[in-house]
Amino acid sequence: MRWSDRLFTRPPLIVAGQPATGWVGMLTSWATAGYGAASASSATGMLLSADEGACGSLSTAVCQVAGWGGLLMGVVLLAVAALVGLTVARGFGPPITWWMLPLMLGALALAPFRAAAGASVPWLWLLLAVVSALLALSLAAAAVRRGRAALYGWIRLDGLDAREAAHRPIDRILAPAALAAAVTAGLFGAHVIRLLSEA
Image (cartoon, rainbow, N blue to C red):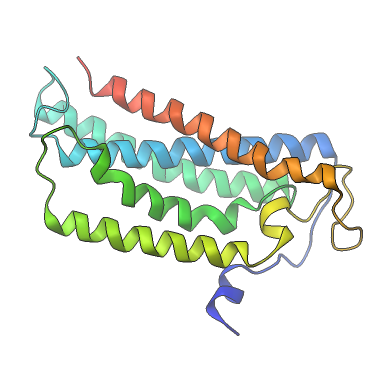
């Protein structure tokens, strides 16, 4: 069995539940993931530039506390997103568990770009960012190759199992809805971390 088959396995049991509950779970999990990834990325950028005036008039100690707190919050929220996807969404919409590693690696890759203007980012961080970006892209490509389940989930909008009844054209709104929730929450998360770094 290939590593991608092990990493992107189909769950043995899909509980359809109610479509309304599935929508709540999908949007909540993806919003939480977007907020967590943006928080982790922005907070890491803050840590990289703690001594370069990134925190305005705040002390370096306060800046580092805010940075480590934002990074911890981001990692915890990514884990919570996976938990919500498993317990509430249950296969409705794009499976957040498949996209968690690409999101985490993508956040790490973007961290140097979140540093303050003029901050000197160590070359080791830049190398780590490049490797993380390549890994994120490869994992995302592997997830996409899983097919419709990776983009639309295993449950249709009417709550039927997509393995037994094919997805309909209207089910295609699941992926854009998940992406919109993640991007919106991510922008808000980045804004919150930016407020923490200002006086």
